[in-house]
Figure 1 (cartoon, rainbow, N blue to C red):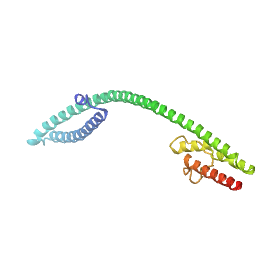
Figure 2: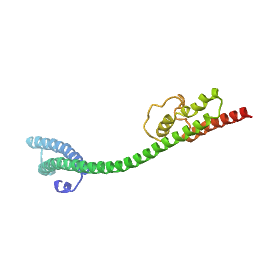
Figure 3: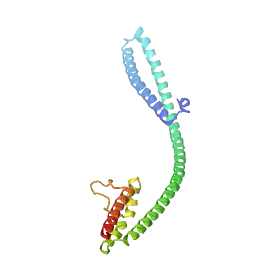
Figure 4: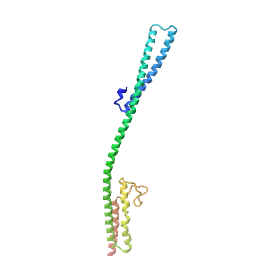
Length: 222
């Protein structure tokens, strides 16, 4: 059994041990039956009732018991050897698994470094777009404020602020699978937290309000 398990993995060795233990249990039952028969034959011999085939059977039983005992001893030796081999194999497999896990973790971290670089580039690009968008809106509002009645200038100036661009960018990042930052309730409904406009559609609403303010100002000039 030991020779057969040298090239086995731990699961195969465990299966072989279980089979050998099952065989040993079967032999133990057989040994009990043979010993009972041996005692019966010995009793008959003591009474002078053992003769012919029964006398020959007494010798056969003794031989069978010797064979079973030898097989039991062989199995016990094999099981002990297999358990030692199993312990060594489990240690080797654990070491091999640890090596594989470390290598995989190192590869994942290398991949993470590449993703981190791409994320940094994307965020830097988004940041520059945020600055550019804020500047464009600020300039447009500044130009429009010059041509609306005084009592409407605050509303015009508030168009850019009402967009809450910082919140919109954070919301877009979250909805794209980014970190779940707490978002102010401007665009987020408590019952539908992921239903929110994109930056583009929110800006389109701002543009509509700007055009309405322009049309109102032009109407007053006529």
